[in-house]
Structure formats: structure tokens, C-alpha cells
Length: 108
Image (cartoon, rainbow, N blue to C red):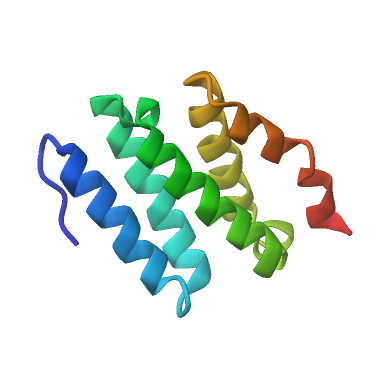
């Protein structure tokens, strides 16, 4: 999945949806790719889009529920998780803020 020099909202959302489908296989690599996509999307301000927030928050919830060991065992995934949440918190989304309240569960 190559990225354009200036990603469009359509590219951003399509990329995240593809990554959501792929997440059944290589979980850590896919999560890092999700974080990379969000990082790239910040140049276009996509973290302010409700659709992007809902998609990313849903992906993070899924990863926290099903694959929390990734964040406990992989410092790169843990840093990417924090960066993802910070991106949407800084954009003013309370849904992202609420997810941070339970991050200590990763280590239980």
C-alpha cells in the first residue's frame, strides 16, 4: 500500500479499513502500520475527522481487548499506541481520552 505525497481523506480512510481487515494476521506489523497511517494523515488534519476518529478508536479498542500482550511485550507497539491516542486527544476527541483511563490493564 503506497502512499501519495499528499494523502487525501479517501486514501486515509481506505488505508485504515484495509489495515483493519489485515489485522487478523500480522498483528504487531499492522498496528505499527496503522500508527504510521495516522502519523501521515496528520499532515492533512485527518485526526479532526469523526470518521477517522471512530475508525482508529475502534481499532485501538479491538487491539486492547484482543491483543493487549502486544503492548506489554513490544515497546514499539506501546509507543505507537500512546502516539495514536495522543493524536486524537490533542484533536479534542473525548473518546480517545477515555481509552487512556484503562491503559494500566495492559499490564494485568
